[in-house]
Length: 182
Image (tube, rainbow, N blue to C red; front, side, top):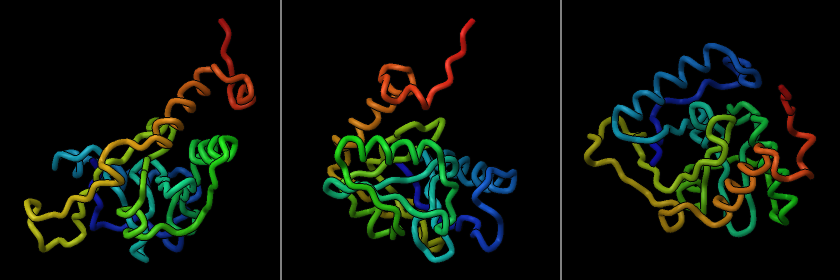
């Protein structure tokens, strides 16, 4: 269950968001902690243009039909390695992928959505609560189900396959791995 934040993600015109730097971690940690204190699992940032940016430490991918969409770095995101890997896996499975802006309406109306990142791997987003209007008390915030409110089939398939890949169970992706031998 994710919280759509009223605070905006730092914009590429303000800071180089293409690299991991301390300033982004401060913003991420402050608002992720705030979301968790309010009972949510994770937070979602918008950018200055009011489009979806990313989670505090994860990229966001939405699915409609057989198409996965994630946003471009111009949308105030760090281009994650896991994000790139998931898009490649999806293409190998025959799904369409696109990199394009994601509006709030796109996110809330998606068939499926998930966070993706090194720690998150593939984490389904089944519900989103909108806290953008700071004048509305939390008890009146609107909650939206993504799809049927449960992790979707494509998300689950990608989560399972990605988990197997990073554990060395699919030789075709071995070039992604660095094995450490004792």
